Image 1 (cartoon, one colour):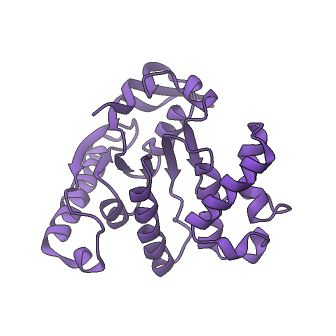
Image 2 (image 1 turned 180 degrees about the vertical axis):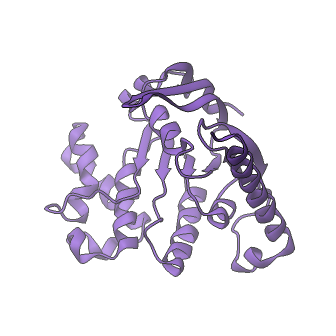
Length: 263
């Protein structure tokens, strides 16, 4: 299967007031087409930095990134990448329909075609009855659905999601995870998902990649072979619990080793 994202020997160093700060070091990651991969790790390990490199928002200090076999800037130019932030970042003065229309307008898509595509995407995320509502009139989960619809309306090959459900309560988050799985199964998108929630990562993903603390690097890559759709009963199964414990142990080991070598 052809790779959708390929990160090779990636290093990122920022200049800070106290000197150079290496966030990522010799980071390698390959993601196949139509694969859902989650990154987990302690705060500051570079998870979001990886997403930003793939989205061409940050330039590598060393190494390279390819998206569909091309540099990220070319993939962005061809509108092959969608980005969903932790906050919905909707325009408060535009209603649901107009928020979703925005990328199509910026791309110069014909008005009639744009309307049809936006309405179809809003229906896909289950908000057909809310097209005239403004962000302030929506719940947090509904706002994130609009943000995801806006990211997907250009039909990008790659969806980058940076903790999109972190601010939601547990029940709403579970509902959103179930909904996102349905959307993923109905499309041919590739998803790179950042989260601190191990259960969420396993529930959603084909692979869960564990990162060590700064400088960020991969310490474990778990394959999740549970069939989809993943029911609520699965979350309490011995197999799910074992995989969750293994991921937690990997995170604990990395944090413990970091404390040992810290000055």
